[in-house]
Image (cartoon, rainbow, N blue to C red; front, side):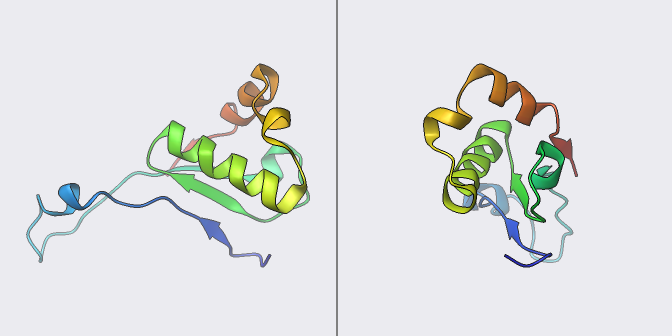
Length: 88
């Protein structure tokens, strides 16, 4: 994984349909730096909502750090992850 890797969600098409093609669209994303949760990893996970971000973070933790779904879905781990979420 390289230093600039991001995991992102998708932008719903019905949201994009509300804007004219020449309008600037500013969408706030939630981000989580894997390093902030104690991993030696430069991945930054993103999502439009907390639910999407948590899903993306779980997928990354399982795929790249060897966690199981059960490991990361404990109330303690969820709280730890949520405490490091930032709005960008």
